[in-house]
Image (cartoon, rainbow, N blue to C red; front, side, top):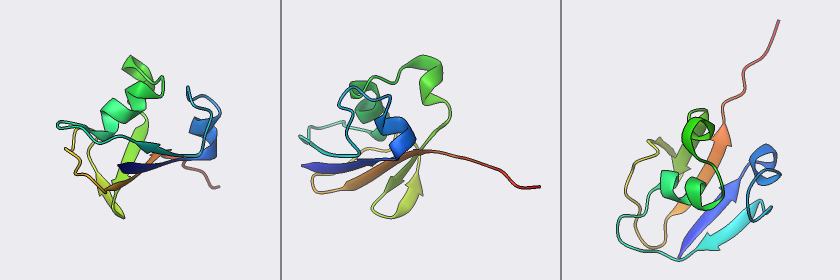
Length: 79
């Protein structure tokens, strides 16, 4: 299983509407595939960032059974 955490902003738009979910592992699974499974496609994927086991990763990073994935959007701000 892959433990997935979506930041609240993404969870509101996701198919599951959940901030935390478990995804069945399968060979070739990537953070992008999980995002697509949650309803994010095309240009919706562009602002997404993935953190795999606590380290920033590319959306096309192959996952292993037992990995923890966080999907988030980079938010900048300040004065």
